[in-house]
Image (cartoon, rainbow, N blue to C red; front, side, top):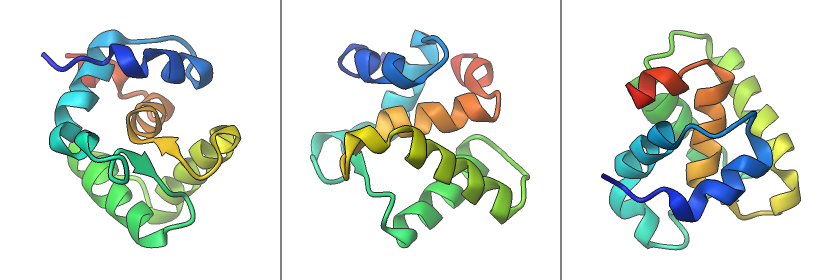
Length: 110
């Protein structure tokens, strides 16, 4: 099982609680991407990256059928929520907050 403990404090800073099983699933899903500093972070200013997150994470992994504008609005809300992090937002926390926003933490923790 993936070790989510190093992300727990950052997630707890923004989330409405902490679902360790869901966090571990996200860490497992991201896998090798987390080994590289650049790919372990989300740049809210990079529209290409946000497009990939919308398609691969929101639609692919979370199975969301929301409109592009609804998904984009949710990502913008997470970007705004994490604005204190500056340009370096933890990808694990970002994905966790998107899953929380759409009520998908329990499904991930499954």
